[in-house]
Image (cartoon, rainbow, N blue to C red):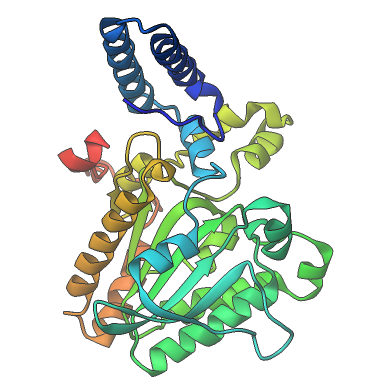
Length: 342
């Protein structure tokens, strides 16, 4: 069992790193002194696998949030280059400028033209500054609106990748009407006569996420989250202390499993043990399969049916009134056995 030294370790993963270190020391000692320690190595490997399964099978919501933010996690462009062919990025909102935190363009999927929109984070300080840490500006949402309209005009299915802490909250963004730009996207997406699929691949933060997230199908990776606000912001509002972020995460029901049960997410895409960053190729293949399957289902609907179904989907979110006396309330949706095991 070969174990490379990890580049980044989350707090709850430390028991695994300790076992890896023990194994490395044991293997090094064996090679140096020509000792037969196969039994000891096998015992540590067995303990490592059992510990790993126990940890990732019992993650709290806050731990899933940490995995969603893992700096080695695949970002939107990683999936785009792995899944689609001939991606051609299109720039600018034709009003103010370009935004590198929200990218978009045409590509081919299984031989058919599609339009892609994606929130892109950066790796390292330089790229993070270029991508504004994945927080789109108003011009990003206006660029997205332009490409949405293009997709509708040329009958190209729209596929969006959501991965943002939220829209940029700075003064300049407010001066350029970021709320109006997001609202315009919500309206535009609700009226698109084409199939729309949104994938939450990491963080799905606030209006910044929903700005490209009004879709016929909402798919979410197993350790991603989708929320009206970050756990830290919610903790600061509710308990006046960001230190209660883990408590807020549990209360808000923002995990993939909670969102599926509540009917917000349509499917949970499984990740390998340890998260998507542990096997990006495997995760990309799972995402590819899910997109293919849902696109085939959606292509059976007429433009009118797509818009009607999309409207009804969002109207059905939440509970709007109490049942009358003697009337049974609808039972909450429960995940399939496959999703429940995720």
